[in-house]
Image (cartoon, rainbow, N blue to C red; front, side, top):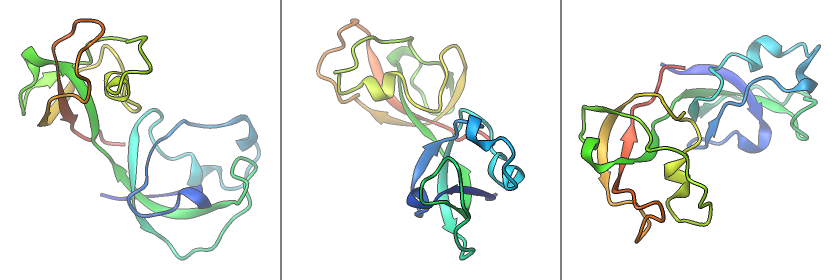
Length: 148
């Protein structure tokens, strides 16, 4: 089910995904706080619709905010291959300092936390790296979207 929220005008496009970061210092005293700060912090969302509601001034977004419909979005992540089965639960293998690796965004994905179990909805296959610098045997999976 979609939730209506306000996001920056530049982000207001169907298909855009983002991780909700929570309240910024500049939000204090804003009259639109209840419409803007209504998502679960740290979760990934996808814009599913843009409302024709106009643009509101915002101290955080330079071009203002507009109303959109969002739904929780799944997260692509690398998990240990031994637990990479659709329908099972898994957690991330652990932090990785190798930010230059093509798999880093999947080993430390935005919208998922270390030490948390996630439901695997799909096994996507091999991760984008040729060799894991931490010698981990990993598989790319899709974690189910969390209710937001």
